[in-house]
Image (cartoon, helix red, strand yellow):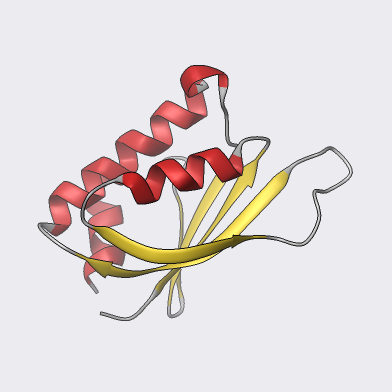
Amino acid sequence: MADIQFEIQGQDAIAATEALFAHPGLEGHWETADEPDKEGTIATIGAIVGIVGGIITIAAQIREWYQEYQKGKAGKKIDKVLLVKGDRRLLLKDATIEEIRQILED
């Protein structure tokens, strides 16, 4: 599996990224981007380097995680999540589980 790059933007990007990698089955690494922008938005960048278990289950977990943080899970919110694999880019805003599965699997 080739690495899947990601970027998470929002005031609570760090907490959201930690929660993403708390899901069983996802392995990877991430770091905080240099400095928050002028609105105080933080970004994390990293890579998903391994998936253990079913791709469809992981895709559904990623979609659920994104929706929870878009709504402000426990008062924490993110603005944008981008997945990149090779020349494919997927914004999670309106992505389906199938689209997430395709980028994880290809």
